[in-house]
Image 1 (cartoon, rainbow, N blue to C red):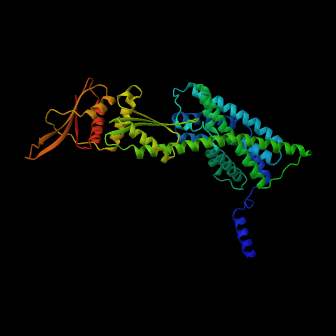
Image 2: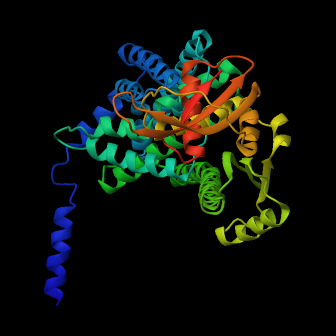
Image 3: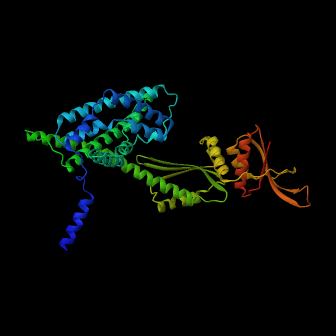
Length: 439
């Protein structure tokens, strides 16, 4: 039994052995030390990379941002700090810290300059993603730093380091900070700088731990108190960095759970023949969770709404406020042009375009419920009616029936809006062949 355990242990040790193809220790330290300095080529490469990353964030292009991260040499000082702590080389730590500060200032100034002159000032999703760091960013930076140090310690260099540069993403937070300064949004600045700090600290910590695992030779301090002081500082920095990220991760998880439960509640409970949900908003803030819904069609009475609120507990939505706006009273509170566009676009994308048919004129009967909805969506509606027409084909004696809707407006609609409105009416009446005549 002991022999079998030894064989298993030997197989695992051999499989995960990092000493086998490790480069010479002097070569590892020299290579990392060489990338610490930010002057000349490295500094210009950093500036160009910052401009590219800023443009990528500005136009929301992931590919451009990845390209900027591959160009950037900013990981050099970070890994230098971690290795310096690992081998007790305080001069390397100081040099890494000074160059990292230079790189950070140059990056923020460059990105601020770009975002001050660009005509595009909207915060895109790629940029917003760098304003709310969490514990997952800690894990990404930590494991990325481990991978980077492993790659730097090999005799034959591979493609791990570019992947680490992409995963740990030191560049975009600096560009986001520049955007925040240029636009005066200091919350963006704080969030981005915190994310940058997380990435830098945990790449350095991972480099330190991997250097100890690889048993790189350490310089022994004459005064043991210096070693204790360095260790104490490292622990304090790690704790101060990780605590806020854990809180942010807790909030992100809770928000995601709330939104999923709220979405499930609305999708499963709001099924009514003559009432539709046309707008829904889920709000999660400190001590307050709210579901805001806009309904069109028949007005839900109070017992139905009370029943819906009671069923919220089954979706883990206890203490969540449900706000329902319905009927014409909602007209003053909601942006109906946006609602109209979202409804008709959804219908337009889910239906096929109908064939055009020549229609015969015939008076139409009004449908009060649909007319109410139309007046909400299109305030310029003056008349509405739907009727079935008998249509005789010119080449045969066959007579077809065709449902036709006639709507009059004070101002004529554009052709695209007429087509979308026709598709909405087809869905509303569950009649795919319904044709619209707009006047």
